[in-house]
Amino acid sequence: MAAPGKCLLVTGPPGVGKTTLIMRVFESLKTSNPNLEIQGFYTREIREGSERVGFEVVTLDGRKAPLASSSISTPESLRWPTVGKYKVDLASFESLALPELQVKEDADLFIIDEVGKMELYSSSFFPAVLKVLESNVPVLASIPVPKFGRDIPGVARLRNHPGATIFTLSPNNRDAVKEQIYRQLVDSLRKL
Image (cartoon, rainbow, N blue to C red; front, side, top):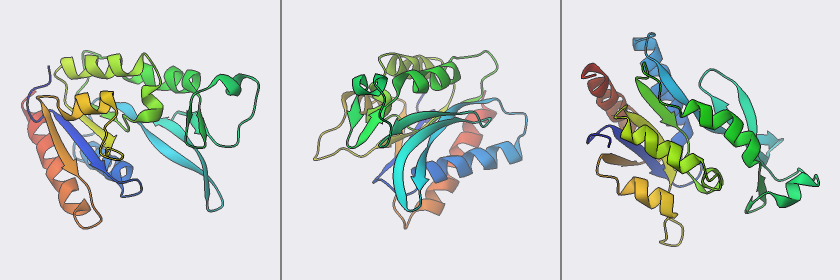
C-alpha cells in the first residue's frame, strides 16, 4: 500500500493542463536528477487541423501507440468500446502501457497519465495500477473529475486511496501546484 503522500493525483476539467503539468514535473525531475528511473506513460491528443480526432499513449522514452480514434473504421474496430465519439483500441493501448506498469527493482517513480474511462476499459490496466500502488514506489497520476457528480469506480477507488493526495488543477493555480508536486516528489524520493 502506498504510504501517505506517495500517490499524487492531479484532477481537473478537460483541457486545464493536467498532462502538461505532469510532463513539466517529469522534465524538472529528470533535469535535477538524471539518474532517476521513472516509468510510465502519458496520453496526448491527435489533431487534424483544429479538430481533435483521437488520442495516443506515449511512453516516457517516446514510444507511441494509438489509444482512441474518431476516424478509424475497420471491421475489427466495430467491436472496440466507445467513449463519446472515440473508439478505444485496447490491444494497442495494452501493448504499450501495461509493460510500463511492471514494477522493477530500480523504479523510483511511476507516471500514469491518465487513469480514465478509456484506459479502464482494459481489464488488465487497473490491477496493474493497484500493483504499482502496493509497491510503495511514488506515483504521479492524473484522473478525471466526476461527471454529473458520479465517479468512475476505479477512479473513485484511487481518489479514496489512503495514500492519495489530490491536487485539483485550475488555470489560476497551475504553477503553484506544479511546484508543490515537484517538492513533494523530491522529498519522497530522498527518503527512498
